[in-house]
Image (cartoon, rainbow, N blue to C red; front, side):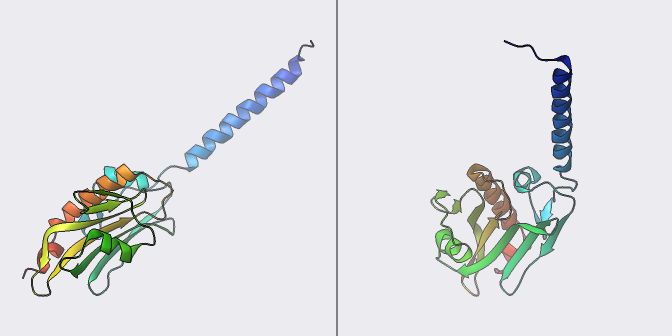
Length: 179
């Protein structure tokens, strides 16, 4: 058995030190340099619920993407669409599964509250309570889709859609149809 020469041991220690510096430098570059939004296009959002789905980056933009009977909102980090939300009126008597089928190619396998909320690791759909347009006989549905996020967590997505839907239920959008 041969012993290692002192200069080889010193070289190995130096390479290890450089590797550790490089790794710590990478983690510094992977920080969020932006503030987590407190609302998405006028709808309050729990920052603790949305934060896991937001990536590292420098700039965040929250942009209204609404049209006709759909209220949409996009969350963009460093020019990449990360999260989108939707509030949409559908014919009364539809289900969350029906709404989800029109919003995604995936079928969210998880559900809670007798199917009122359907979710997967990166998207979720909900049906509001009490948000009814009496004139057009419609009900308001919600969606949160984090398809641009690398984070997948079904439990976190469930909490996010429930809290987001509760905020929508308090909004002017909810009561607009009852006028």
